[in-house]
Image 1 (cartoon, one colour):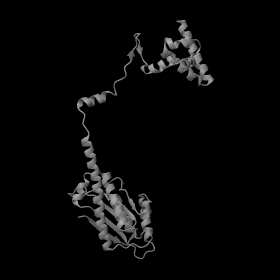
Image 2 (cartoon, rainbow, N blue to C red; image 1 turned 180 degrees about the horizontal axis):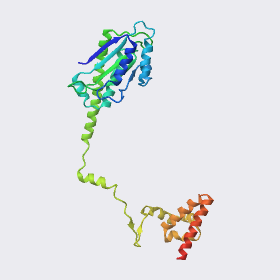
Image 3 (cartoon, helix red, strand yellow; image 1 turned 60 degrees about the vertical axis):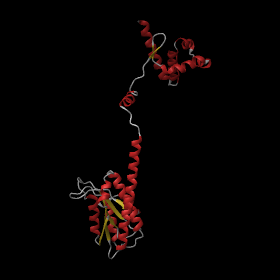
Image 4 (cartoon, rainbow, N blue to C red; image 1 turned 90 degrees about the vertical axis):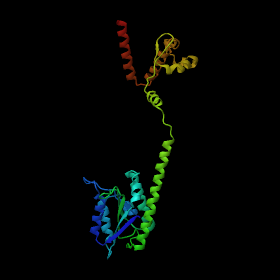
Length: 288
């Protein structure tokens, strides 16, 4: 059986202390860390967990009311449901509880606003036990004073139980479908896994040509054949007396053609420097 504890007081300063408590009180939560504060209602959701601003808003909502009622709810799941939550990680558990809290207050306490925090620690001799602490403003969203009757609290408890069980069941179905899909996948044997691991690592070998030399550009065979068969392309890429190189050494001619096209797109100063360097290289070869 699920449990919902609802208490109220009329002290704005105590409400601020309760917000501080639900944000920082947790086993293992040290070094100034805090739990995430989530808003109930548009106004408190817009604060985005700003703890000082939330405490200030709660105090301001109590002004002008003779007897402001600050409700604090503790929404707890039973032991079998807590054991089911152990199948989920912390993120999914918090997501299920967040959705359940928002749907519960929106459905059974429409107009209520405030903040809540999700706690997932257990107690002494008890494993992790997810539960929620919520502090409500003394005013509804329409600025009317809050009054929550015992009948309304009982409806909140019943709705809380339905929403938690429904969200938990949806997450469990997703986990089961994922495990079934993984179970249907064929597991490759050791030989197939080794082949898949080695194939992308093996380098591409250089092939040898008919004249005994290594062919370092095997991917250029088809483009070179197209150039040799197309007379217009050959005339377009022929540079002076070097046009016969397409028949003698097509790969070398293709590299020279690409180099000339690239240098023509360069500024004149860069072309002059490249020409000077090529001239010095030719002079050194002639001196040998």
